[in-house]
Amino acid sequence: MSASHRQATAGPHRVLILGAGYAGMAAATQLAARTRRADVQVAVVNARERFTERLRLHMAATGQQLAELDIPELLAVTGAQFVRGWVTAVDAQAKTVRVDDSRELRYDTLVYALGSVTDTAAVPGAEDHAYTLDGPSGAPALADRLARLGGGTVVVVGSGLTGVEAAAEIAERHPGLDVTLVGRQDPGAAMNTKARAYLRAALTRLGVRVLSGAPVTAVLPDGVVLAGAETVAADVVLWTAGTRAAPLAAAAGLTVDERGLVVTDTTLRSVSHPDVYAIGDTAAIRQSYGVLHGTCQSGMPTGVHAAVSIARTLRGRRPKPFRFGYYHTPVSLGRNDAVVQFTRPDDSPRRGCLTGRTAVWYKETVSASPWPTYRRMSRLPSSGAFWPRGGRFTRVRDAR
Ligand SMILES: Cc1cc2nc3c(=O)[nH]c(=O)nc-3n(C[C@H](O)[C@H](O)[C@H](O)COP(=O)(O)OP(=O)(O)OC[C@H]3O[C@@H](n4cnc5c(N)ncnc54)[C@H](O)[C@@H]3O)c2cc1C
Image (tube, rainbow, N blue to C red; front, side, top):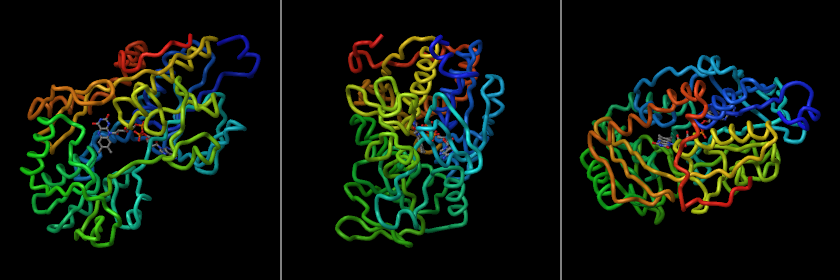
Protein backbone atom coordinates (compact mmCIF):
# COMPACT_ATOMS: atom_id res chain seq x y z
CA MET A 1 0.00 0.00 0.00
CA SER A 2 1.31 3.48 -0.81
CA ALA A 3 2.58 5.62 2.05
CA SER A 4 0.15 8.41 1.16
CA HIS A 5 -2.70 5.99 1.41
CA ARG A 6 -1.66 4.71 4.84
CA GLN A 7 -1.65 8.29 6.10
CA ALA A 8 -5.12 8.93 4.70
CA THR A 9 -6.80 5.97 6.39
CA ALA A 10 -6.45 4.29 9.74
CA GLY A 11 -6.64 0.49 9.68
CA PRO A 12 -6.97 -1.74 6.64
CA HIS A 13 -8.13 -0.44 3.28
CA ARG A 14 -11.76 -1.60 2.97
CA VAL A 15 -12.91 -2.80 -0.43
CA LEU A 16 -16.62 -3.50 -0.59
CA ILE A 17 -17.94 -5.46 -3.57
CA LEU A 18 -21.69 -5.17 -4.18
CA GLY A 19 -23.06 -8.22 -6.00
CA ALA A 20 -21.63 -11.74 -6.22
CA GLY A 21 -22.63 -12.50 -9.80
CA TYR A 22 -20.25 -13.35 -12.63
CA ALA A 23 -18.40 -10.02 -12.46
CA GLY A 24 -18.47 -9.53 -8.67
CA MET A 25 -17.13 -13.05 -7.98
CA ALA A 26 -14.30 -12.49 -10.46
CA ALA A 27 -13.39 -9.24 -8.69
CA ALA A 28 -13.62 -10.80 -5.21
CA THR A 29 -11.52 -13.90 -5.90
CA GLN A 30 -8.89 -11.91 -7.80
CA LEU A 31 -8.63 -9.08 -5.31
CA ALA A 32 -8.48 -11.31 -2.23
CA ALA A 33 -5.73 -13.40 -3.85
CA ARG A 34 -3.75 -10.37 -5.05
CA THR A 35 -3.86 -8.52 -1.72
CA ARG A 36 -3.33 -11.48 0.64
CA ARG A 37 -0.20 -9.98 2.19
CA ALA A 38 -1.42 -6.37 2.12
CA ASP A 39 -3.43 -4.51 4.74
CA VAL A 40 -6.66 -4.88 2.78
CA GLN A 41 -10.09 -6.11 3.83
CA VAL A 42 -12.33 -7.48 1.06
CA ALA A 43 -16.05 -7.96 1.71
CA VAL A 44 -18.78 -9.04 -0.72
CA VAL A 45 -22.49 -8.27 -0.28
CA ASN A 46 -25.02 -10.41 -2.13
CA ALA A 47 -28.74 -11.04 -1.89
CA ARG A 48 -28.28 -14.72 -1.15
CA GLU A 49 -25.68 -17.39 -0.49
CA ARG A 50 -26.40 -19.46 -3.57
CA PHE A 51 -24.75 -18.27 -6.78
CA THR A 52 -27.30 -17.42 -9.48
CA GLU A 53 -26.20 -19.08 -12.71
CA ARG A 54 -27.86 -16.53 -14.92
CA LEU A 55 -26.53 -18.27 -18.02
CA ARG A 56 -28.80 -21.19 -17.14
CA LEU A 57 -31.96 -19.35 -16.07
CA HIS A 58 -33.86 -20.59 -19.14
CA MET A 59 -33.19 -24.09 -17.80
CA ALA A 60 -34.41 -23.15 -14.31
CA ALA A 61 -37.52 -21.66 -15.98
CA THR A 62 -38.42 -25.11 -17.29
CA GLY A 63 -37.95 -26.84 -13.94
CA GLN A 64 -34.41 -28.16 -14.43
CA GLN A 65 -32.29 -28.38 -11.30
CA LEU A 66 -29.15 -26.25 -11.28
CA ALA A 67 -26.05 -26.95 -9.21
CA GLU A 68 -25.91 -25.64 -5.61
CA LEU A 69 -22.97 -23.26 -5.82
CA ASP A 70 -22.25 -21.84 -2.38
CA ILE A 71 -20.70 -18.35 -2.44
CA PRO A 72 -19.54 -18.16 1.23
CA GLU A 73 -17.90 -21.59 0.93
CA LEU A 74 -15.91 -20.52 -2.13
CA LEU A 75 -15.00 -17.13 -0.63
CA ALA A 76 -13.88 -18.72 2.65
CA VAL A 77 -10.69 -20.05 1.05
CA THR A 78 -9.89 -16.61 -0.40
CA GLY A 79 -10.12 -14.66 2.86
CA ALA A 80 -12.86 -12.37 1.49
CA GLN A 81 -15.75 -11.83 3.88
CA PHE A 82 -19.33 -12.60 2.77
CA VAL A 83 -22.28 -10.44 3.84
CA ARG A 84 -25.72 -11.74 2.99
CA GLY A 85 -28.26 -8.99 2.45
CA TRP A 86 -30.06 -6.66 0.09
CA VAL A 87 -28.30 -3.38 -0.71
CA THR A 88 -30.85 -0.59 -0.31
CA ALA A 89 -28.71 2.54 -0.64
CA VAL A 90 -25.22 3.81 -1.37
CA ASP A 91 -23.99 7.11 0.09
CA ALA A 92 -21.13 7.97 -2.22
CA GLN A 93 -20.16 11.05 -0.17
CA ALA A 94 -20.03 9.36 3.22
CA LYS A 95 -18.72 6.15 1.55
CA THR A 96 -21.30 3.92 3.19
CA VAL A 97 -23.70 1.25 1.97
CA ARG A 98 -26.98 0.34 3.62
CA VAL A 99 -27.86 -3.34 3.69
CA ASP A 100 -31.42 -4.53 4.46
CA ASP A 101 -32.08 -0.96 5.71
CA SER A 102 -30.64 -2.07 9.03
CA ARG A 103 -26.87 -2.29 8.65
CA GLU A 104 -24.35 0.25 7.44
CA LEU A 105 -21.05 -0.84 5.87
CA ARG A 106 -18.12 1.53 5.27
CA TYR A 107 -15.75 1.41 2.36
CA ASP A 108 -12.63 3.06 1.02
CA THR A 109 -13.10 1.58 -2.46
CA LEU A 110 -16.43 0.33 -3.79
CA VAL A 111 -16.89 -2.21 -6.58
CA TYR A 112 -20.41 -1.87 -7.94
CA ALA A 113 -21.50 -5.15 -9.56
CA LEU A 114 -25.25 -5.45 -9.03
CA GLY A 115 -26.03 -6.65 -12.56
CA SER A 116 -29.11 -5.67 -14.53
CA VAL A 117 -32.81 -6.51 -14.63
CA THR A 118 -35.21 -7.07 -17.51
CA ASP A 119 -36.72 -3.80 -18.68
CA THR A 120 -40.39 -4.39 -17.96
CA ALA A 121 -40.99 -0.63 -17.81
CA ALA A 122 -40.63 -0.46 -21.60
CA VAL A 123 -44.34 -1.08 -22.39
CA PRO A 124 -47.59 -0.89 -20.40
CA GLY A 125 -48.62 -4.12 -18.72
CA ALA A 126 -45.25 -5.90 -18.88
CA GLU A 127 -44.54 -5.24 -15.21
CA ASP A 128 -47.93 -6.62 -14.11
CA HIS A 129 -48.68 -9.43 -16.53
CA ALA A 130 -45.38 -10.84 -17.83
CA TYR A 131 -42.92 -13.23 -16.24
CA THR A 132 -39.20 -12.49 -16.38
CA LEU A 133 -36.14 -14.67 -15.74
CA ASP A 134 -34.84 -12.21 -13.13
CA GLY A 135 -33.68 -13.27 -9.71
CA PRO A 136 -34.15 -16.53 -7.89
CA SER A 137 -37.94 -16.15 -7.87
CA GLY A 138 -38.51 -15.24 -11.54
CA ALA A 139 -37.43 -18.47 -13.25
CA PRO A 140 -38.85 -20.89 -10.63
CA ALA A 141 -42.20 -19.06 -10.66
CA LEU A 142 -42.40 -19.46 -14.43
CA ALA A 143 -41.39 -23.12 -14.16
CA ASP A 144 -44.20 -23.68 -11.71
CA ARG A 145 -46.76 -21.97 -13.97
CA LEU A 146 -45.64 -23.88 -17.08
CA ALA A 147 -45.78 -27.20 -15.24
CA ARG A 148 -49.41 -26.52 -14.23
CA LEU A 149 -50.48 -25.26 -17.65
CA GLY A 150 -50.98 -28.58 -19.46
CA GLY A 151 -51.84 -26.97 -22.81
CA GLY A 152 -52.08 -23.43 -24.16
CA THR A 153 -49.90 -20.70 -25.61
CA VAL A 154 -46.71 -19.14 -24.33
CA VAL A 155 -45.51 -15.91 -25.91
CA VAL A 156 -41.83 -15.10 -25.43
CA VAL A 157 -41.21 -11.41 -26.10
CA GLY A 158 -37.71 -10.47 -27.30
CA SER A 159 -35.94 -12.16 -30.20
CA GLY A 160 -32.49 -11.60 -28.70
CA LEU A 161 -30.48 -14.56 -27.52
CA THR A 162 -32.19 -14.84 -24.12
CA GLY A 163 -35.57 -15.00 -25.87
CA VAL A 164 -34.34 -17.60 -28.36
CA GLU A 165 -32.84 -19.82 -25.64
CA ALA A 166 -35.97 -19.53 -23.49
CA ALA A 167 -38.40 -20.25 -26.37
CA ALA A 168 -36.38 -23.29 -27.49
CA GLU A 169 -36.12 -24.66 -23.97
CA ILE A 170 -39.85 -24.21 -23.24
CA ALA A 171 -40.85 -25.82 -26.55
CA GLU A 172 -38.57 -28.79 -25.95
CA ARG A 173 -39.57 -29.39 -22.31
CA HIS A 174 -43.29 -28.73 -22.87
CA PRO A 175 -44.20 -30.15 -26.30
CA GLY A 176 -47.90 -29.75 -25.45
CA LEU A 177 -47.61 -25.94 -25.40
CA ASP A 178 -47.69 -23.61 -28.42
CA VAL A 179 -44.68 -21.33 -28.18
CA THR A 180 -44.47 -18.05 -30.12
CA LEU A 181 -41.34 -15.91 -30.19
CA VAL A 182 -42.11 -12.24 -30.87
CA GLY A 183 -39.54 -9.53 -31.52
CA ARG A 184 -38.38 -6.59 -33.58
CA GLN A 185 -35.59 -8.48 -35.33
CA ASP A 186 -35.15 -11.91 -36.85
CA PRO A 187 -33.77 -14.36 -34.28
CA GLY A 188 -29.99 -14.59 -34.72
CA ALA A 189 -29.97 -11.32 -36.68
CA ALA A 190 -26.36 -10.61 -35.66
CA MET A 191 -25.10 -14.01 -36.86
CA ASN A 192 -23.77 -15.01 -40.27
CA THR A 193 -26.14 -16.54 -42.85
CA LYS A 194 -25.30 -20.15 -42.01
CA ALA A 195 -25.63 -19.78 -38.23
CA ARG A 196 -28.84 -17.76 -38.56
CA ALA A 197 -30.40 -20.33 -40.89
CA TYR A 198 -29.39 -23.15 -38.51
CA LEU A 199 -30.93 -21.33 -35.54
CA ARG A 200 -34.14 -20.66 -37.44
CA ALA A 201 -34.43 -24.30 -38.60
CA ALA A 202 -33.92 -25.51 -35.02
CA LEU A 203 -36.75 -23.26 -33.78
CA THR A 204 -39.02 -24.59 -36.55
CA ARG A 205 -38.11 -28.20 -35.65
CA LEU A 206 -39.02 -27.48 -32.02
CA GLY A 207 -42.36 -26.02 -33.14
CA VAL A 208 -41.60 -22.42 -32.15
CA ARG A 209 -43.60 -19.92 -34.22
CA VAL A 210 -41.60 -16.78 -34.97
CA LEU A 211 -43.15 -13.32 -35.42
CA SER A 212 -40.36 -10.89 -36.22
CA GLY A 213 -40.53 -7.23 -37.20
CA ALA A 214 -43.35 -7.08 -34.68
CA PRO A 215 -42.65 -4.81 -31.72
CA VAL A 216 -44.92 -5.45 -28.74
CA THR A 217 -46.65 -2.28 -27.55
CA ALA A 218 -48.54 -3.64 -24.54
CA VAL A 219 -48.95 -6.76 -22.42
CA LEU A 220 -52.48 -7.78 -21.41
CA PRO A 221 -53.55 -10.38 -18.83
CA ASP A 222 -54.28 -12.74 -21.72
CA GLY A 223 -51.85 -11.80 -24.48
CA VAL A 224 -49.76 -9.12 -26.13
CA VAL A 225 -50.60 -6.22 -28.46
CA LEU A 226 -48.33 -5.69 -31.49
CA ALA A 227 -47.62 -2.40 -33.27
CA GLY A 228 -50.53 -2.09 -35.68
CA ALA A 229 -52.94 -3.21 -32.93
CA GLU A 230 -52.97 -6.96 -33.74
CA THR A 231 -53.18 -9.03 -30.56
CA VAL A 232 -51.63 -12.42 -29.92
CA ALA A 233 -53.44 -14.46 -27.28
CA ALA A 234 -51.28 -16.05 -24.58
CA ASP A 235 -51.79 -17.97 -21.36
CA VAL A 236 -48.27 -16.99 -20.29
CA VAL A 237 -46.07 -14.12 -21.44
CA LEU A 238 -42.31 -14.19 -20.79
CA TRP A 239 -40.65 -10.78 -21.24
CA THR A 240 -36.94 -10.87 -22.22
CA ALA A 241 -36.66 -7.66 -24.27
CA GLY A 242 -34.06 -5.21 -23.01
CA THR A 243 -32.30 -4.66 -19.71
CA ARG A 244 -31.75 -1.77 -17.35
CA ALA A 245 -29.95 -1.20 -14.06
CA ALA A 246 -31.55 -0.80 -10.64
CA PRO A 247 -32.08 2.89 -9.68
CA LEU A 248 -29.60 2.60 -6.78
CA ALA A 249 -26.58 4.03 -8.61
CA ALA A 250 -28.49 7.04 -9.90
CA ALA A 251 -29.94 7.65 -6.44
CA ALA A 252 -26.40 7.65 -5.05
CA GLY A 253 -25.47 10.46 -7.43
CA LEU A 254 -23.20 8.36 -9.65
CA THR A 255 -23.27 9.42 -13.30
CA VAL A 256 -25.47 6.95 -15.17
CA ASP A 257 -26.66 6.59 -18.75
CA GLU A 258 -30.27 6.42 -20.02
CA ARG A 259 -30.59 2.80 -18.80
CA GLY A 260 -29.25 3.60 -15.34
CA LEU A 261 -25.84 2.00 -16.03
CA VAL A 262 -22.84 3.53 -14.25
CA VAL A 263 -20.72 5.43 -16.76
CA THR A 264 -17.05 4.50 -16.35
CA ASP A 265 -13.75 5.93 -17.48
CA THR A 266 -11.29 3.79 -19.44
CA THR A 267 -10.08 2.10 -16.23
CA LEU A 268 -13.65 1.13 -15.11
CA ARG A 269 -13.93 3.81 -12.41
CA SER A 270 -17.11 5.86 -12.19
CA VAL A 271 -16.58 9.11 -14.10
CA SER A 272 -18.16 11.02 -11.20
CA HIS A 273 -16.74 9.01 -8.27
CA PRO A 274 -13.25 7.58 -8.93
CA ASP A 275 -13.29 5.54 -5.71
CA VAL A 276 -16.14 3.49 -7.24
CA TYR A 277 -15.43 0.84 -9.86
CA ALA A 278 -18.41 -0.39 -11.92
CA ILE A 279 -18.25 -3.78 -13.61
CA GLY A 280 -20.40 -6.32 -15.44
CA ASP A 281 -23.91 -5.67 -16.71
CA THR A 282 -24.43 -2.65 -14.48
CA ALA A 283 -21.62 -0.61 -16.07
CA ALA A 284 -21.63 1.42 -19.30
CA ILE A 285 -18.11 0.57 -20.49
CA ARG A 286 -17.00 2.10 -23.75
CA GLN A 287 -14.55 0.47 -26.13
CA SER A 288 -13.52 1.97 -29.47
CA TYR A 289 -16.26 -0.08 -31.23
CA GLY A 290 -19.05 0.95 -28.81
CA VAL A 291 -20.44 0.34 -25.33
CA LEU A 292 -20.16 -3.28 -24.13
CA HIS A 293 -23.45 -5.14 -24.06
CA GLY A 294 -24.07 -7.27 -20.96
CA THR A 295 -22.43 -10.68 -21.20
CA CYS A 296 -20.62 -12.98 -18.85
CA GLN A 297 -17.92 -13.12 -21.53
CA SER A 298 -17.04 -9.47 -20.91
CA GLY A 299 -18.31 -9.27 -17.30
CA MET A 300 -15.72 -11.60 -15.82
CA PRO A 301 -12.78 -9.71 -17.40
CA THR A 302 -14.18 -6.42 -16.05
CA GLY A 303 -14.15 -7.95 -12.54
CA VAL A 304 -10.57 -9.13 -12.93
CA HIS A 305 -9.50 -5.77 -14.32
CA ALA A 306 -11.08 -3.86 -11.42
CA ALA A 307 -9.27 -6.15 -8.94
CA VAL A 308 -5.93 -5.73 -10.72
CA SER A 309 -6.45 -1.95 -10.83
CA ILE A 310 -7.28 -1.73 -7.12
CA ALA A 311 -4.21 -3.81 -6.25
CA ARG A 312 -2.05 -1.58 -8.48
CA THR A 313 -3.46 1.60 -6.92
CA LEU A 314 -2.77 0.32 -3.43
CA ARG A 315 0.86 -0.17 -4.49
CA GLY A 316 0.96 3.45 -5.61
CA ARG A 317 0.66 2.66 -9.34
CA ARG A 318 -1.89 3.88 -11.88
CA PRO A 319 -4.67 1.61 -13.17
CA LYS A 320 -4.44 0.68 -16.85
CA PRO A 321 -7.21 1.11 -19.43
CA PHE A 322 -9.56 -1.83 -19.81
CA ARG A 323 -9.51 -3.51 -23.21
CA PHE A 324 -11.80 -6.29 -24.33
CA GLY A 325 -12.79 -7.94 -27.61
CA TYR A 326 -15.64 -10.42 -28.05
CA TYR A 327 -14.85 -13.85 -29.46
CA HIS A 328 -18.07 -15.90 -29.54
CA THR A 329 -21.85 -16.05 -29.21
CA PRO A 330 -22.91 -19.48 -27.93
CA VAL A 331 -26.67 -20.12 -28.06
CA SER A 332 -28.44 -23.21 -26.75
CA LEU A 333 -31.44 -24.52 -28.71
CA GLY A 334 -32.87 -26.86 -26.09
CA ARG A 335 -30.68 -29.51 -24.46
CA ASN A 336 -29.74 -31.37 -27.64
CA ASP A 337 -28.86 -28.62 -30.06
CA ALA A 338 -26.96 -25.34 -30.13
CA VAL A 339 -25.17 -22.93 -32.41
CA VAL A 340 -21.96 -21.03 -31.69
CA GLN A 341 -21.12 -17.99 -33.78
CA PHE A 342 -17.46 -16.96 -33.61
CA THR A 343 -17.06 -13.21 -33.71
CA ARG A 344 -14.59 -10.44 -34.34
CA PRO A 345 -13.63 -8.33 -31.30
CA ASP A 346 -16.36 -5.80 -32.14
CA ASP A 347 -18.93 -8.67 -31.99
CA SER A 348 -19.52 -8.81 -35.75
CA PRO A 349 -19.80 -12.38 -37.04
CA ARG A 350 -16.85 -14.28 -38.49
CA ARG A 351 -17.33 -16.99 -41.08
CA GLY A 352 -16.84 -19.79 -38.57
CA CYS A 353 -19.62 -21.31 -36.50
CA LEU A 354 -20.35 -24.60 -34.72
CA THR A 355 -23.66 -26.43 -34.81
CA GLY A 356 -25.24 -29.57 -33.37
CA ARG A 357 -23.48 -31.79 -30.80
CA THR A 358 -20.15 -29.95 -30.99
CA ALA A 359 -21.94 -26.68 -30.29
CA VAL A 360 -23.85 -28.31 -27.39
CA TRP A 361 -20.54 -29.43 -25.86
CA TYR A 362 -18.99 -25.97 -26.43
CA LYS A 363 -21.95 -24.13 -24.86
CA GLU A 364 -21.96 -26.44 -21.83
CA THR A 365 -18.20 -26.00 -21.36
CA VAL A 366 -18.66 -22.22 -21.40
CA SER A 367 -21.63 -22.27 -19.01
CA ALA A 368 -19.84 -24.57 -16.53
CA SER A 369 -16.53 -22.70 -16.57
CA PRO A 370 -17.03 -19.69 -14.23
CA TRP A 371 -17.08 -21.58 -10.92
CA PRO A 372 -13.84 -23.58 -11.52
CA THR A 373 -12.32 -20.35 -12.87
CA TYR A 374 -13.02 -18.54 -9.56
CA ARG A 375 -11.44 -21.43 -7.64
CA ARG A 376 -8.38 -21.38 -9.89
CA MET A 377 -8.06 -17.59 -9.70
CA SER A 378 -8.08 -17.66 -5.92
CA ARG A 379 -5.04 -19.99 -6.01
CA LEU A 380 -3.32 -18.56 -9.11
CA PRO A 381 -4.43 -14.94 -9.53
CA SER A 382 -2.36 -14.37 -12.65
CA SER A 383 -4.37 -17.10 -14.45
CA GLY A 384 -7.36 -14.75 -14.50
CA ALA A 385 -5.58 -12.00 -16.36
CA PHE A 386 -5.80 -13.65 -19.78
CA TRP A 387 -8.72 -12.62 -21.95
CA PRO A 388 -8.88 -11.34 -25.54
CA ARG A 389 -7.91 -7.66 -25.49
CA GLY A 390 -9.38 -7.01 -28.93
CA GLY A 391 -6.12 -6.27 -30.77
CA ARG A 392 -6.41 -3.36 -33.21
CA PHE A 393 -10.14 -3.05 -32.39
CA THR A 394 -9.37 -1.69 -28.91
CA ARG A 395 -5.78 -0.44 -29.10
CA VAL A 396 -5.24 2.69 -26.99
CA ARG A 397 -2.26 4.57 -25.65
CA ASP A 398 -1.58 3.21 -22.16
CA ALA A 399 -1.91 5.87 -19.45
CA ARG A 400 0.95 4.40 -17.41
C1 LIG B 1 -31.03 -16.88 -20.00
C2 LIG B 1 -29.73 -16.12 -20.12
C3 LIG B 1 -28.69 -16.67 -20.86
C4 LIG B 1 -27.47 -16.00 -20.98
N1 LIG B 1 -26.47 -16.57 -21.70
C5 LIG B 1 -25.27 -15.95 -21.80
C6 LIG B 1 -24.18 -16.57 -22.50
O1 LIG B 1 -24.31 -17.65 -23.08
N2 LIG B 1 -23.00 -15.93 -22.54
C7 LIG B 1 -22.79 -14.72 -21.91
O2 LIG B 1 -21.68 -14.20 -21.95
N3 LIG B 1 -23.81 -14.11 -21.23
C8 LIG B 1 -25.03 -14.68 -21.16
N4 LIG B 1 -26.06 -14.08 -20.48
C9 LIG B 1 -25.82 -12.76 -19.86
C10 LIG B 1 -25.11 -12.93 -18.50
O3 LIG B 1 -25.87 -13.78 -17.68
C11 LIG B 1 -24.94 -11.60 -17.80
O4 LIG B 1 -24.25 -10.73 -18.67
C12 LIG B 1 -24.14 -11.78 -16.50
O5 LIG B 1 -24.91 -12.48 -15.57
C13 LIG B 1 -23.72 -10.43 -15.91
O6 LIG B 1 -22.99 -10.64 -14.74
P1 LIG B 1 -23.05 -9.59 -13.55
O7 LIG B 1 -22.11 -10.09 -12.51
O8 LIG B 1 -22.89 -8.22 -14.06
O9 LIG B 1 -24.56 -9.66 -13.01
P2 LIG B 1 -25.34 -10.91 -12.32
O10 LIG B 1 -24.74 -12.19 -12.76
O11 LIG B 1 -26.75 -10.65 -12.59
O12 LIG B 1 -25.00 -10.70 -10.78
C14 LIG B 1 -25.53 -9.64 -10.02
C15 LIG B 1 -25.58 -10.09 -8.56
O13 LIG B 1 -25.99 -9.00 -7.74
C16 LIG B 1 -27.01 -9.43 -6.85
N5 LIG B 1 -27.83 -8.25 -6.55
C17 LIG B 1 -28.52 -7.47 -7.41
N6 LIG B 1 -29.10 -6.45 -6.76
C18 LIG B 1 -28.78 -6.60 -5.44
C19 LIG B 1 -29.04 -5.83 -4.27
N7 LIG B 1 -29.74 -4.68 -4.29
N8 LIG B 1 -28.53 -6.29 -3.08
C20 LIG B 1 -27.79 -7.43 -3.03
N9 LIG B 1 -27.49 -8.18 -4.13
C21 LIG B 1 -27.97 -7.76 -5.30
C22 LIG B 1 -27.76 -10.51 -7.62
O14 LIG B 1 -28.46 -11.33 -6.72
C23 LIG B 1 -26.59 -11.22 -8.32
O15 LIG B 1 -26.03 -12.20 -7.49
C24 LIG B 1 -27.30 -14.73 -20.34
C25 LIG B 1 -28.34 -14.17 -19.59
C26 LIG B 1 -29.55 -14.85 -19.49
C27 LIG B 1 -30.66 -14.22 -18.67
